[in-house]
Image 1 (cartoon, rainbow, N blue to C red):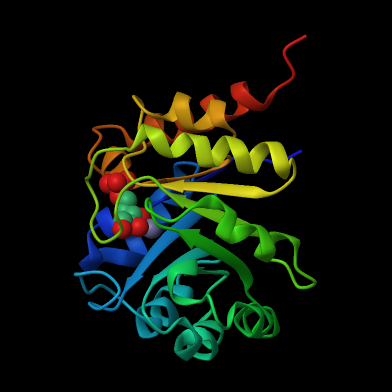
Image 2 (cartoon, rainbow, N blue to C red):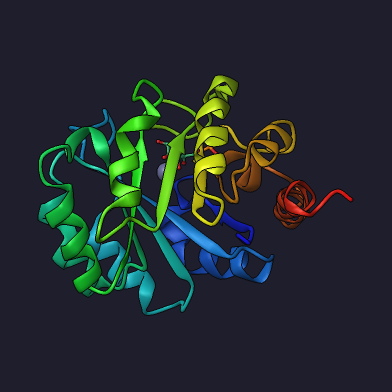
Length: 226
Ligand code: DX5
Ligand code: ZN
């Protein structure tokens, strides 16, 4: 059985107070902290890298769920591992050729490998990675075009989530982009259990209430209905 993992996206936090923001989220019940690493090339935005992960790691034991929106993920494995990243999720669009080596390296650097797919990428592309000899341990289904927080959830991505959940009952399936109180039920019903939420959590008057609501929706959807 998969368990809910609620992962506030720190992209929507106050980066100037990252350690305090991380603590605040963990205290409010976050399971993971989602860290968006962007290189200004794979996506038209530039955010943070390994030095920031390394600094944050000194202030928290939380699981740092790192989402690499970069053109050359291989170049970052070693430094992200040393910095203290917990999960390393790369995009399949830039890893068609070398995903096997990449997954192996991520594991030997002590991180949990995940693969992400953009809205336009067919779900079939990740099957070999889930079924490989050295499999990824999470699939991230993007529910917006990557690059920015605060975009609209794309409900038609739920077909991908449903297909993955039917095929892989115990796989961690993450959704990222536009998740919040009005969209979580669709994602949870489709079978997502790892929920990234940026603006809906950080923009709420009571972020803890949103985290709780997200978790309850996933729990409700995954409990047996006898
Ligand atoms: C978008 C990032 C997301 C983003 C989500 O490229 O991968 O993690 O922070 O933000 P919201 O929840 O505001 O859509
Ligand atoms: Zn992300």
